[in-house]
Image (cartoon, rainbow, N blue to C red; front, side):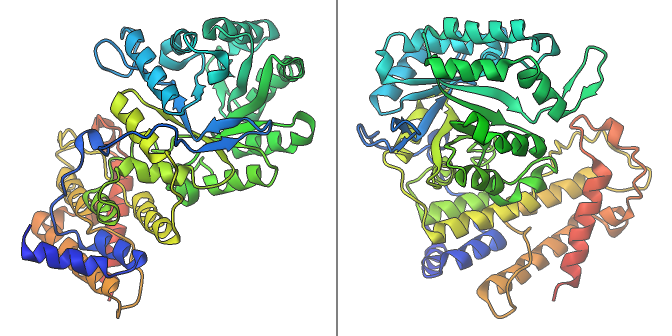
Length: 479
């Protein structure tokens, strides 16, 4: 390491978390640091130290839940394609390892792994005593053809059969808030879907009866999509007494979910509504579909500077389990290394400090507002009728984003963060003018949409041009 790098690191060490975050995301000068193989930390995997949370019945549930949407296959993939043969021996080994290290909740659903997940986890768990694990599955009657009481009942009965159990620890109405389509392709509103899937056919009342009989120990729902349906089901809590609810929750979705998708709702709202009713929370997507492992170079550098030995994924998992109302955090772990890394993170769980929370919020803010344009440089969009260098503009923007030279302007001109912002601002603008002649820059886009149909990535190119041009104009006007 050069003396210059050492000096910079020592300087960063002396700053608070807020300053550190702004500087690291703004400066973007040094190369990406070496990370652990597969993006996971190395070292001993603790036994007997898993953080446990209590459900409404006083049962201890592992904070890490084993998600069964992806399973190892013979060819090393994640089992999400029909022609991939699940590796049952490896699934058995991972389940054995998980239970040995304190993981006791396994979550699946009929559609997972192309309909093979319930059977595979049932085989693996059948080799263990019934009191060693909790199993969770869902009523996945998504297709209109399964909305009848008879067909929905078949799904419920089949889950018990495939899982090889005589009762379900956790059962959920799957994917409330999602719309559907009828046989003619017409969209059915999300609220209408919910009522027809669970209310009109009497299935919800039946499941409540099953809970009273002990065939279901905990009854809840998983939420995706329309917030009206979430609020509606919570308004019925006094009647149905939901035992748990599964939501998407991570440090980006906490405050910035709508920036990722306007249909989304911040998980801070979802969590607060559940917490005030005392409903335990299951978490899905703690890594936002893996995106919170693949951060830009300087976000990763920032996390490594704060905790060099911790994996990037561990930060997201620590956040996902940070709120006391979280019962379990589900993670799909195709590889043993991922399982081991997550066990380390929660054995035991180390709550995030205020400084660490501020650091993650800084990263989340930049991530939500400035994301890579998924351009592969294929140039199918070219030539542009108005001479715009579309792939060149995207390449420069993505490069600057990865180097930390794209960020929100904040702070006063007297602070080190703002001085670094000014330097990053100049680097972006000078680089932009050098890489892209002025007559071929984003401000010349008229939104003709000629390029949109040609893009194999489905990028809304005119929309991206407006965003990048607005950012360029903002930088030019910033003192």
